[in-house]
Image (cartoon, rainbow, N blue to C red):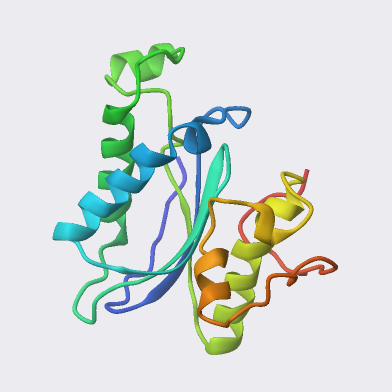
Amino acid sequence: MPNYRRRFVPGGCWFFTVNLLDRRSHLLTDNIDALRDATRRTKQNHPFRIDAWVILPDHLHAIWTLPPDDADFSTRWRLIKTRFVRAIPKDERLSPTRKARRERGIWQRRFWEHLIRDENEFGRYVEYCAINPVKHTHVRRAVDWPYSSFHRDVRRGMFSEDWGTDIDIPGDFGEAET
């Protein structure tokens, strides 16, 4: 059994990758309002700042900054995942293990996180979130993907609308290349 080790840094800034169990699914974009509501409700009692976020059909990437006295990102993800699952119809196939544990077959059990160490790394992960729909060939330009904080960042002047049309972001960001 793997030994999962997580760092807990109060007030930390984190990059996350969270996947659906069925990587061919479109549940996240098909149920975007349920995901937004689950996130909004979680933030009410467990605040965090969303620095960047991109929702793809089968996975998402996010950058969060937690409050100065708080390092508990796991509870936040558990609540978001649970609230999302409760808001969508029960029509997925379940493995015997998931049935025995009374789990839905929506999310992968774990998520990938990385503590962001400096401004340069922060900028690279924000760019990665913005370019991810292009990387996965959902759109040709970052601005064309509707489920991204890229639009907020364009309004704030952080990016131009034509950013990311000819860009390659090297590095390992928690996803295996296929």
